[in-house]
Structure formats: structure tokens, C-alpha cells
Image (cartoon, rainbow, N blue to C red; front, side):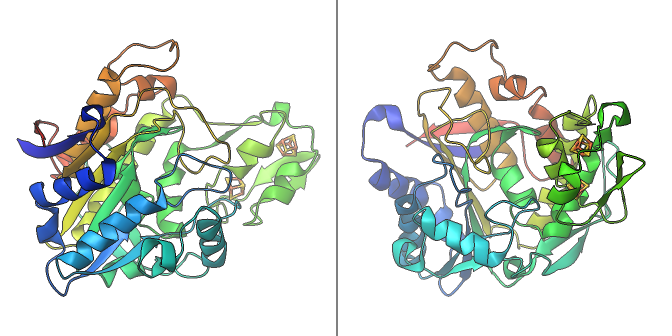
Length: 363
Ligand code: SF4
Ligand code: SF4
């Protein structure tokens, strides 16, 4: 049974002092032992998004790490698709636009997979379950230079994984472009040539030059394709599609990638803080400002990424809803996104990454 500590926003206490109390009572202070170089992993939001974690929250964690003698740096990675976080330079510009600078967070900001997003180290996935074919995952270099990591995750929904929390942040957020592509390849993007009118918009939109027109139809070169799905989003004819069941397979892969990232750190050198607030049905990579679907709940802390995510899913299910939803618990975020979010958690548990059973201690 894993321990999960909970700071309840419903108690009306100020949030930053609550975060401090949680940091010490959950044992997070031990993760950032004196002298340890501590990666504070955070998704700093796509441009246009407004529900990413606020910079003062990140600054507070940075200050807490420093207070116990750790040496923090704030880290994120580039993304696969050509939005405003495609390169490290884009990431830093967008981070600044969203309020994250070394001055505001109180620590250096490092884009962990380098300027183009390919700087990483292969970590073997020596054991697989649930049909996963990943054999290695490229973990972003800067994480291998850290002694410890505190993962700050915004608990919310995700178009492919249903729920996105600590596991998703480890898997997709701590890997290089190749690491992300290997996970995204699992969804097996489909193409229905009968819908394609040869407009060429997808060819122009593919930054990996993996598409061409042949005989008036788009043709994908699978050797070059990085599975970013930009073509799916730009095609107005819906010629590209995600096959039935692909979200379930995708979650199996993200659980394995999370397992590979966690292998990089010694036992006891990872801590997870999930912020159950601004709970949108989609993730912080979205360029639109979405409305939350539930009331804000609080902050969860644990050394177990499976337990902290399961507790987040459960608390989101129990929270008062802000809008009429066509779905009932359990797993409202999974249902909204057409999957069962427990798949990623069950697979991660099978891999020994953590436990679905937890004891919730409200501080
Ligand atoms: S954008 Fe759609 S319709 Fe246009 S070429 Fe690509 S697949 Fe065909
Ligand atoms: S073909 Fe589509 S999925 Fe593949 S890299 Fe190009 S835009 Fe991305």
C-alpha cells in the first residue's frame, strides 16, 4: 500500500504554505538531499494554453529544494509537433511568454533534450508486459545528469491517454523526440485514401518530410514519420485517423517509457507532486484555453507515481463538477477522451513502478 499525502484546497488554507507543509510531511525533503542536483520537472505550457502550473508554484518547490540543500534546475523537453515548443529556443521563448524565466522560478531552466530535441541516452526496457514492443527509450540527457527529480504534474485529461499525470509527465515529458516518437508509433495512425483529395496541406505541414503526393493522394514514408500526428490535425477531409483501441495501446507504451525514465534514478530519489486544479479534459499542449470540468481539489504528494495518479483520478471523480458531463465516474477524464485511463496505471503497476492501492493522508 503506497502512501499519498493530500493538501485539500477545500480547507481554505493558503496554497503555497500548504505546498510547503506537504513537501516536508510527504518526505519530499529527503529526495532533495544536501548537495543533490535536483531536476524539477514541469510542463510550462504551450502558447495559448492557460491551465499549466503557475510559475510561483514552481518557484516555491525550487525554494524548498534549496532550503534542504539541494541544487535545483527546472526542466522540460521539446515536443514532436511543430508548435511553439519544437526546439529548445522555442521552448524557452514560450516558457518566458507563459511566465517562466530563471528569475521567476529562481533556478536555471534547462531543455533537457537539447536544442533540436534529439539529445538523449538509450535506456533498455528489459521487461515488457501487455504486448508492448518497446525495447529501449531515449531519455533526455539532462535527466541523467541529475541526482534526483521532483516531478510536478498538472492532473488533467489527455486526448490519447485519457488522464495525464505523473506517468505521462515521466514518459513523454522526460524523453527525446525519438523517445516520444517510439511511444506515439503505438497508436498506428491510419489513412483512408478514399477521403484524400490531394490538396497537399499535410505535405506542407509535415516537418519531417515524411509525406508526398503521388497520383493525387498523400503517401506516408514510415521510415521518416515521427508519428507527431500533425497531418491528422491539418487534414480537413479527415483522411488520417486514430484506429479503434489505439488509446489503450498508447497507454501501455507510456507506462513502459515511464518505467525506463524511472530507472535512471536511484531508489528514493524521485518525488511526485500532482496538482489537481484547473482540471481540463485536454492537456497543457493544447493551444486553446479550456474550461475546467471540476472544482479545484488540492495537491497530492508521493514517492509512487502510480499511486499519486490513481489518487488524482479518484479525487477528480469525486470532485463537484462545473459543467454537465455526459459521463459518470469512475474515470470521467478517460471516458471524455474515449479510453480507460486505468490501463496506464495497471501496466505501470505490473512493471513494478508503483501501486494502485494507496493510503491517503490529509495533512
Ligand atoms: S491534407 Fe488530407 S486531403 Fe489534403 S493531401 Fe493530405 S490527406 Fe489528402
Ligand atoms: S507523416 Fe504525419 S505523423 Fe508522420 S511525421 Fe509527418 S505529420 Fe507527423
